[in-house]
Structure formats: structure tokens, C-alpha cells
Length: 146
Image (cartoon, rainbow, N blue to C red; front, side, top):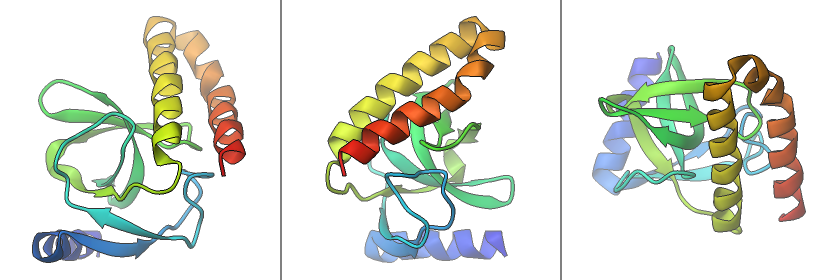
């Protein structure tokens, strides 16, 4: 089922350059809300802080790009999520079309995520304790910008 959905999404991007979809879940709140309609466009360039749609463990996820790794792998994390995903480039389907206040949100999220990942890599025992405060900080800042 997921493979077929990914195939359809890739065909829509190939033919039209974009497609419309409905958000399911809360991992990107408050930027994206459950049930919200969004546009996913063709990836032209990978930029930190942009949100990308990708396949991960037989699911389709939209999270923010937090880092570029070796061997064409990317690190993603949701604004309201405690999980980080390492995704190979071939699993990336498309990029979220920028929305109102997106640039301010993006800069803030990139800074917070960079700091979090740095601390997590240097001090894993402490970094794990920062998952919830990181989520809360991003959520509170983004809610103020709505």
C-alpha cells in the first residue's frame, strides 16, 4: 500500500511539479495541523529547515531537515516529535510548499535543532533529557507567530 502511494506521489510530482495532500498526525504542530491541506512540490535543492515528505519504515512522514550526513543521507526531526530519522536521498518524495511566516519558523527551528543535535551528540545522556523541552520551545515560539 505505501509503495503504491509513494509511486503515485512521485508520478504526480513528475507530471505536475506538485501535488496536494492532507496532513495526518501532530508531529509538525503547530506549523501543520491534523487535517490541514498542503502542497508538496518537486525537490530542487535541499535546505536545512525546509520540510520534506519521505518514506520511513513503511510510513510516509513529513518532517524538517535538520542535517545533511555522509553518503547522501539526511537527518530529519518533527517540530513536535522526539524521534530523529536518518533517510537516504532516494526515499525523499518532495518538499513542503512554503507557507505564511515559514521563513521565521524555519530559522528558529534550524537553530534549536542544531543546538539539540550538537548537545545530543556530545552528551547523549543529557541530550535525551532535552527532547521534551526542545519540542515545547519550538511549539511555544511557533504559536506566537501564528
